[in-house]
Image (cartoon, rainbow, N blue to C red; front, top):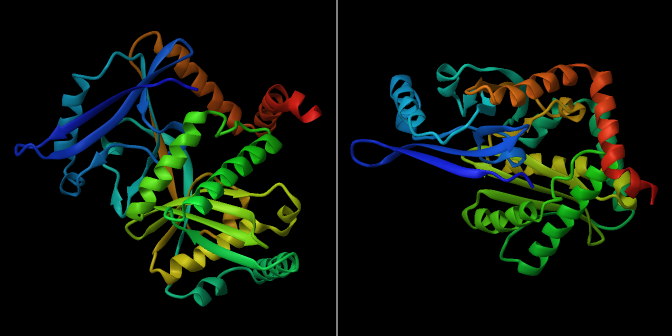
Amino acid sequence: MLAIRPWIAVVLNADNQPKLIFPLGVRSSFGSRVLEFLGGAQSDYQGPLIHDEWLVDIPKIRFAWTLVCKYLPRHDVRHFIKLPKLWCSIDNPMLEIWGVRFQDYSYSAILPASVGEFQAKQRKKFRADSSRQRKRLSEQGDVKFEVLDAGQCGSWDKSIDIMIEQKRQRCRSMGVPDLFADDAVQEFYRELSKMGNSTGLVHFSVLRSSEEIAATHWGAIFRDRFYYLMPTITNGKLGVYSPGRLLLENLVEWCINNNIKVFDFTIGGEEYKRDWCNSEMPLFEHLRVVTPLGLHYAGYIRLRRRVRRNRRMWGAVKFLYSWLRYGKENRG
């Protein structure tokens, strides 16, 4: 677990109304005290919370940030990541205030008014393969797409546990860091699920075959945007029928039928997104060394950037991590 000490700044206007919130924290890494936004691996977009009235007022936001800087906790380096170019349809004002560089892209699908119109834009071969897989899965038992409600306590809690276990198994099989290795992260998703579901912000769904959960998805809805955040699939026999893709298909249809305008796949250029997305948005990062002790961390970040750009080197790093982290378990 990466320990982080929260530090949250709230900027008020003349009427003592909150207009800007910086949810920051400090953690240690490579001998450096790193100032960053709270959320870490659990957030796909990061940045301050800005009241709508201030979003386009760059001078006011710049002055507020200057004021906040006077009270920042001691740190050696600032590293703000996953800063979106746009907030809804408005340019992210922080990109004009902080020195930033390109980090990655996020991808989304601008949804049409009808399911038929969306399907017409997909490759015929892709849709035919999905239909074939859905038919094969139905031969194993009745296939059911279900949007769960936190009020269904027994079913809800059990399904969340299955989601966590499916994700852990997937991470292990791919040799990547286990997002749920920390009990605190598991508890975060359980508690946030209940809180967010009651307000309509958290959307949790499953795809069943004969009551066995073949795939799950934990996501969020804000305004007219659906966030595709945590998909999982079973490692059992039903996994060969592409249940994740079939659940995604149901989710897109659900969004269109419920007047959602954007299906946001968030960060990452995974190959499968090409069959679903028709829009992309750049994400940026801000890295600033404050004291000489911050050079250690900044050097690591810059080295990691260079390694990630080299597919062969990055593949070797992932293989080494997988062997060190899961090698003994897999051999057992």
